Image: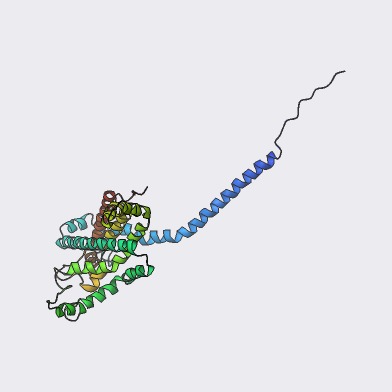
Amino acid sequence: MTIASSSPPSRLPVGGGETAGTTTGTRKARAREGGGDGRLAAVFIAPALLGYLVFLLWPTLRGIYLSFTRFNLLTPAEWVGLDNYVRMVHDPIFWNSLTVTVEYVVINIGVQTVAALAIAVLLQRLTQSATLRGVVLTPYLMSNVVAGLVWLWILDTQLGIGNQIISGLGFDRIPFLNDETWAIPTIALINVWRHVGYTALLLFAGLQAIPNDMYEAAKVDGASEWRMFWRITMPLLRPVLAVVLIMTVIGSFQVFDTVAVTTAGGPANATNVLQYYIYGSAFGRFQFGYASAMSVALLVVLSAITVLQYRLTRAGRTDLG
């Protein structure tokens, strides 16, 4: 009797088709979710991107183009090549404005950074009061124009309360904003008064990232506050301090409103900072091509200073492990 042999049935994984289908469906669902997230992100980014293109990128490109033209709003722009830049190189008022601006920046950044660092360290080491931080920030809530007008009245040579106090102490009145020697330092200190609280809070935020364990260990080893400041605080605060310096330097080179409401560039161009000279050339003398050339020069100077600061201060690296 012959027994017929049959091959064993092939073994298929139970539910194999369902598993593959489920995986494919999951992938498609994730793809749809990813596409939905991407579209949602584009919706949120679109207003900021549109504002960047309309109010920053396009004016920058337009200004670079106008710097090679002669343009006064009344006639079409006339291409003149490098004439505006040649004029700028030979313009003594431009170089005087640049010198005055650098003087302002040095005084403003030097005093503001030291004062802000001192305030931030005191806030971090002595008190954590939110009320005190609010008081420190109060001057920053005032606009530059209002701050300039207030100090213009305070420092008025005849009627200002500041000079009244100086006179009452037996000293001669000081023409703070009417003297070539005093004008730029006075404007710089006015802006220090307004911005130092904000700068201090930025540095205070950086100090908050430094672990307290380091200070406690240093105290156990007998380190003084002064030694801890130089050996712990300054090295670990360096990246934040570098970014703050870059921001404040860029802002200082763009000083305009305080000068406009206090001295209007005087006396004798002693406070005719670069931004005010650019404004006067464009909207006072309608030399928009020349004003654009000076603006491009300022952009190049600020870009070079920013890159140099970033490299020298090693802003992208931290000593925190």
